[in-house]
Length: 289
Image (cartoon, rainbow, N blue to C red):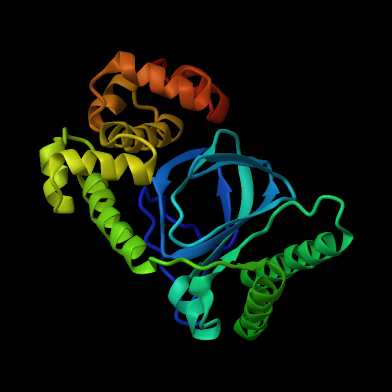
């Protein structure tokens, strides 16, 4: 495996100066990342296992050998309930704009080619290019940056010519303003999720009236703010559940989920199992809950 990427509820993408993009092989034993967005195109290529991805209102089950693309500024979540290995490739929007000036009028799509042989060939070439990037990044032979960057620009060329669709958004500045406002809310929630955050408090962070904030948040995130705060707590609880030997009670207290009945219902809805079943499945025998 190349580099380890820290788990973030709100993704702030760090990129090396030598490439300008984030590219790594991720071995995931189990994780849940609630709704978030970032100013980058994200490509996930599943090498082993599977992962569930929710993009706005649509659910996808990405399996071994499949590739998935999430456009910049699109709200999404990911859930891994069994070990998997995948390539994660994130291309900051500002980097793409250097070489594709009209990128704001483009939407990238890596859809299932179906029975279209030309589309299938293009997608197979795209996957092979990703695999060659992974080899260069993992093995890192002398001068590997030259090889990696040559493949990086080949990928950009393929995205532009084979997997882009022209769109026209009349109010891009309005969308950007909304996402910037959401950015403030998500960051604040990530920093304070383990304590109660009132609607009045979070509305002030967003510089909105409380009533309007509730409508604004539900419209963009697809759930209420309280539901989202519990999703953030759940993601931390899930990680501690499979990576520590702490009791469930201490984990819940640590992350501010005080309503045990609600927790059990939300946990079951997400993972279709009890906390004890998940712990037994994803880690070695540990102390009883």
